[in-house]
Image (cartoon, each protein chain N blue to C red):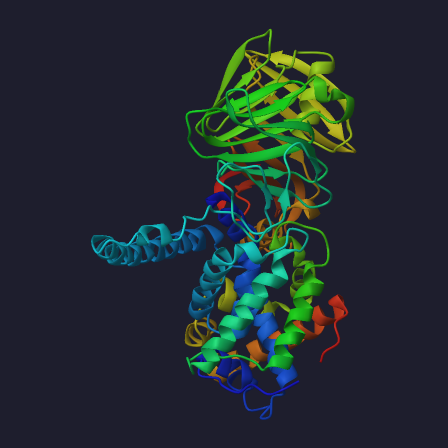
Length: 172
Length: 369
């Protein structure tokens, strides 16, 4: 039933896209993978038990698709199985509080973003909200490419430490 | 944690080495996973589910067409076999109904639905706990029972192709078009359709015999309340039965139907031209509904604490006005089936009002001193 698919995509797509981006890195490939996840999920919809939340099931499909791509040596970036399990654990912690929308569950991320200094936030905002390339950020902020890369790398590291701390997740 | 094995993607390469600026030549699997986690969470904030849904539908349609062409070839082969005298058409696989994941398949269906899902017999009362329950009926209608709700399945009855009795709570139904009616019976009236998407909510507890709210996403339903007669509800409408009066218990019942599960207090109602304006409070926060005298709801809204706004809305506002903007008010409004958030901010001494959709897109802007 299309309305069921609609509901799935509207509620779960942001989470699935986040997870797929973690798996494959680049946004365009992550969007492709996320759409494929829903196509496979729709085909296998009889396998989802009503008592279970769909999140872990959808991420399982994403992991399998990423593994299959790895076997076919497709150009996707990914981490190994242990890292995948660790990522799954973090996502389950994020999903633990009640709430229908994925955005409602990202309080830890929002809080940690607020704790970053202004320059870090600006770099991240240009990169993720504005979709700017490293070169574009470098040109806009009149700073070197290496400086942009270093700033983004450090900002993400700080964010990771902060988010994992707030979620009380062991860092593997 | 194991090391990454393949990194052909520029973004991931940058995550591992490029952005380290040479400071971290041997990035560990844990560091990579943590970086990828944040990379994914940040990228996911910009997700556009509606665009994704359109793309998924296109891909689903393309695959169905491909499957159709394959079926055609298969049918040709079968036809050739038939010419040779074999009744191979009997071996063609039956068309399977579309049953959503986790649906309970209602048995007693004349078509005998085949699915791996659990089956429930007719006449059984079904209650949903904390999660909704989806039921797949023999006519391929789907019924989603809301958490805390219960219904009894009757199947084919009288002239109805399918009948169920909603005992408490709410259902959402998707009914394929057919000649015989699909009927949801309640103590406050029957909701009947020949095919559409609609929802029915009963007033809570002892009020269940008094009132119901009917919303229609597509097509049209009629609500039969003997001896009061039959009333149509068109697509896009939300209608209350009975229509609230400009005072008294009807106004309280209307707010209870529009804000289910909430303790509504301090209800007042007045006529404002042709519209009944009903106001009340949930805790310290105000709620409001504008209802036509025939029970059609024009809009309903509730005040929200800023923390109650979706993160996408908060992030969009912060991105436009910066961290120094002060929240003054926030409100959720439902009008004509659309949901919007209205926020009022104080920015550099000026009050600014914004209206955003649930994904954080600005709808309009009004400035006022």
